[in-house]
Amino acid sequence: MTYQSDIAIYDKIGELVLVAEVRGKIGTDRAWAAKMRRNMLAHGRLPNAPFFLLALPDRFYLWVISQHTVDADNFEDEPDYDVAPIAFKEYAQKMGTDIEELSESGFEFLLTAWLRELARGTEAINGLVEWLVDSGLLNAVQNGNVVTEVVL
Image: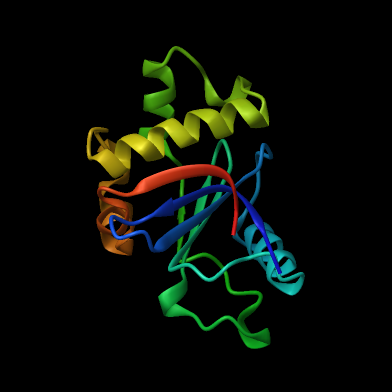
């Protein structure tokens, strides 16, 4: 089955390391995020990658897949990380925008640019250092290739 991801990151040797889905919804919680992931898994819409990011304007939810097995027993696992994306909001402000005012496609465009800078190591990651480092995501995406609307 093929799947089209909003954003994917391949590591420096070309292996898929992150699949990211972007939604414009605000005011969600961990249970909502778990339900969204469960629905995607139930419909075979998530490819095998070490990290899955559900990015919303006010929350980033990250699952570290190596900590889970993808089977019916864990379809409702809550995210391993649930953060308010402070550094991303600061990045948006530097770009002259407020992420809460962006359309979903505008938010996706800005997120893609931010992820590209993270992969290149050029973006200051102020408020997310601990989350990105602890999860292993920062190391996994270093020198990686960020692509959008990719069929996996």
